[in-house]
Image (tube, rainbow, N blue to C red; front, side, top):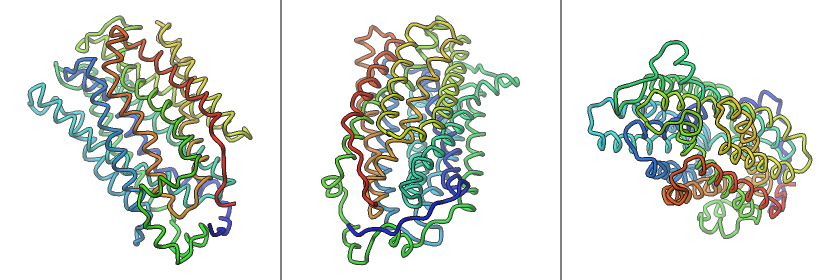
Length: 440
């Protein structure tokens, strides 16, 4: 490895600008994660099949993000290296966000509406993945090792601020008089209009990113990442070869990621049913109580986002990445398990605030630890491949969700206990990580 010139420190606002677009992308992601189970349950999906609808998002991610990473490593034009992929992903996302919540309103049969929703979800998650990945790469490209913890914490803050907007949109629209009920098989206007608003904000954030982000030209990038002309062939190295030569940190952090993202897959899939059953005492998806519970899920996810924002402020103050990583995941596991025992909608705030601690750590620390361990030569490709440690556990969890729910006696609250156990196991696995630094 050729030693790189040290990257200069960036001002706070330059670090902020690198990640601000994540705010808009995360609104779209939050709307998806908080409402997909609600949308498909409202269209008529059986609870035991809900997890199968969640297979598609991570499956698309595991295909799209390595491609975006590898392609952007080799891209340079007047729009930049990473930003062209942000533009394409955001454009598709905006279109699909206007179509998906209308799946039950186009006159399809129940089966037809679900197929339309399934295809729309495929395009939505593909486009969100394409728009999200450039922001992770931009930090790795432009920020030195000393500031990466702060940079990813800013990204975590903006991510959770976007989540807050997305999660609270339906209940906010309900409060101002938008109907939260709809005919059988159709999605309420509160959800539909939330997607429209999210699409509009995403457009604004993409414009902001193109105005305020300056990407390094190829020669400057090569200088700061220790890349010399003779290494161009190395940059063409295949993904499988790069995986074989990946640092041990890639795999140990990936193991922790497996348990974390499987846990959150069960949160997104089963929280609506769990809260409706535990707090409102209903499993009838056509009832007003179920739709009220669906709005409250957005509030709880917003509490999780607030907890994550607050916790993200403290994460950089810990000298040991591993210690705060493990502690955060432990808090999240306790939060998940506590949901099973709580029947008061307000007491659940404490549970989801604890879950927010785990979420903050998951957004910031794995990327800080990983990007410190690799050079800039194949940064985008490695980050794209690393996304497999996010997508694969979700695919496995979604594929097994129906079986596990059956073994759990159909109890969706019990699925959140399983999520808590998974996070605690992830916390224990943090001890296996050994931090290394490739560009010192």
